[in-house]
Amino acid sequence: MNLQRDRSAWLHGPEKVCQVQPLHPAQCRRFVLLGAPGVGKGTQAALLSAAFGTCHLSTGDLFRRAQACDPATLSPGLRQAVIDMQAGHLVSDETVLQLILERTACLTCQGGFILDGFPRTVAQAAALDVLLGQQNAPLECAISYELDPDALAARISGRRTCPVCHGVYHLLTRPPREPDLCDICRAPLTLRADDWPEAVRVRQQAYLAATHCLRDYYADRDLLLPIDAHGTPEEVFGRTITALTERAATPDA
Ligand code: AMP
Image 1 (cartoon, rainbow, N blue to C red):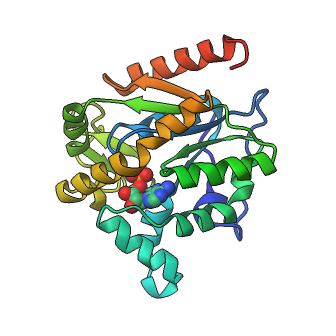
Image 2 (image 1 turned 180 degrees about the horizontal axis):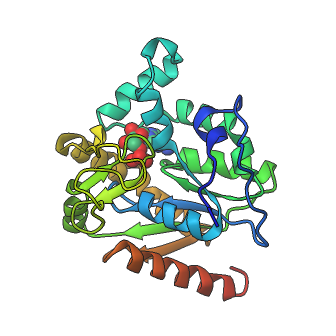
């Protein structure tokens, strides 16, 4: 079965309708993924998406898509977002929340969602809670991938992405079948602009300053699911599935 989701409504906004309708699984899964840049959230999101038939909704993908557009076609907010992203800074809450509001249909989709890169600040998390509360679409949990700083630095320096399908590879742990070419669309793989060493340093600081508090935010609401992110993508994925299964079996989870 091809579980590649159609994310048109997410990537292009409310004017697009997804052509491939989501599956209607018995349980609609709604997750937020947390973790420092480079921890492997995108890779885990792709594996979870394939396992549950749930769309992988990345705010970073929205900004990278805007970056590839003619700046004259972008709103002032998105133009500034591209500048912020290239420098490794966070995009303003106002711009991010505007994009999310335009995509409310993705959050209430019967296929569920895996949010990657949003929320990134407590203000964004609080706004997401309000939105999901209004739509009666509660979060199952916030999966937090955790790795020590040295392992993080090593992981991010080997990361390569496909500019066409956004597939994520790693020179050591997930190399493409042919050197520097995407396995799926055969486009030359690139180092993302925000994965260059200077931007990575700024992103790690931005994460520590703003995103780290989200762990406490979700822990306070009994929604935090911490996962040790050491090891191969498959090992981390196995740990995630085990933890989700155990959580589902826990009364009141
Ligand atoms: P990511 O792919 O999630 O690492 O996002 C890439 C970049 O997009 C980040 O470094 C930020 O500049 C920007 N970005 C993505 N999501 C958000 C968000 N929720 N809040 C602020 N900035 C974001």
